[in-house]
Structure formats: C-alpha cells, structure tokens
Length: 112
Length: 114
Image (cartoon, rainbow over all chains, first blue to last red; front, side):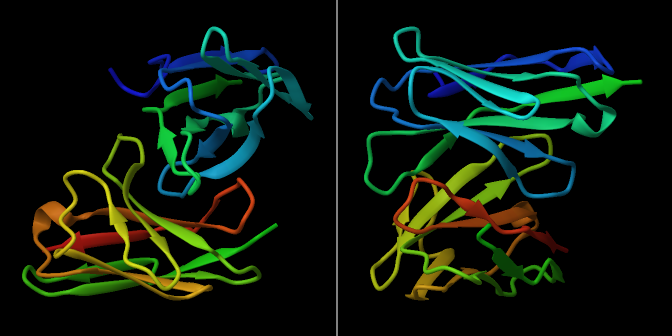
C-alpha cells in the first residue's frame, strides 16, 4: 500500500466550476500536508499546506484535513484554464527532517 | 519567498560520463536539502536527504556510489551522476528547507544520456 494515495483522475471540469482533489495517507505519524501544482516540464510549486484538522482557505483554494479519516483534500473554486496542471499531495512523516512523501498526482484539466 | 536555483537546467551527455548538478538556496540557509527524480508521467521520488556537513541518507534502492551527494555549505548541495546510462535520463529536482516545515523546490534539471 502506498503511503500517500490520490484519486487517480484525470479530472476534467468546466471553467468556473469547483475542482475537488482528494488524498489519503496511511502513516498516522504524518503531521503536515502539502498541495503542489506542477505544470508539464516544470518543478512543483507550493499551493498551500495544512497541519490542523479542519479547513484552511487561501483565495480560491481550500485545503481540508481530517486526521481521524486520514484524508486531505483540495478544493479549487472558480476553476480557470490556467489551473490545468498535475496536482501533487505530499505528507511529512514523523521525522525531524521533514521528508515529504508524494502521491502519484492528479491531472486536472479545466476546459473553457 | 525563498528561492532555490539549479544548474544546469538541462544537460545532454554521453553514456559513461559523469554529470554534476548544483542546487543553491539563494536567500536562506538550507539546513536540509533533498534530491528527487521524476520520470515522465510519474510523481517525484525522493532519492536522498542531505544535511550540511554530514553524509547523505539515501532512499532504498538508490545507489549511493552512483549518485554522489555533497552538501558542503548551508547554501549549496551537488548531485553527481557517475557513469551515466540512458536509464538515468530523468528530471532531477532539488528542494531545500530551513528550520521551518516548508520545502522550496528548484526549477529542476533535465538529464538526457545518449
């Protein structure tokens, strides 16, 4: 079983809709979770991170964390074609070095 | 935000040669740097973790004698791919973190071994 799993996708949504990206993790020691966006041929860029149960909002993005269910999600409101990318979920285990374990990624396409 | 650079951004080399990739944190001191490899249509796979002044910790299945990592200062780590072969062709990405939780990623280096 992979430590971090993402819904397989690809996910296609119309412009203006809400895109929902999901991630589950197996290591209960994981403390922080990160959502990255990666455009083709580029390195990942951080969208947001979350470490407390509940919701965290930043502009059009909302991250949700449920430690009891070991579930992390990212909602993108008012999706734009420029949001089309691969979204990577990553978690840190209980290590002091903060090593990240990445999910396999979900490809999101926002069509006009 | 914190900036991490990588050099070169791309490199093409002949099979059997060695290639060095540099990773620099430009505006902060990186206590820890990470090296990842990403094959097409796959996610990032951590290769090794390096702390300044100490030996790198390699992930299972990564040959430490083939992928030499040096973290000589708080702003520079290097990855040397020794005796490169076509199967080493990949996108190599470094990241750096200070004492906080966030990792800052470099732009990546695309290696092609002929």
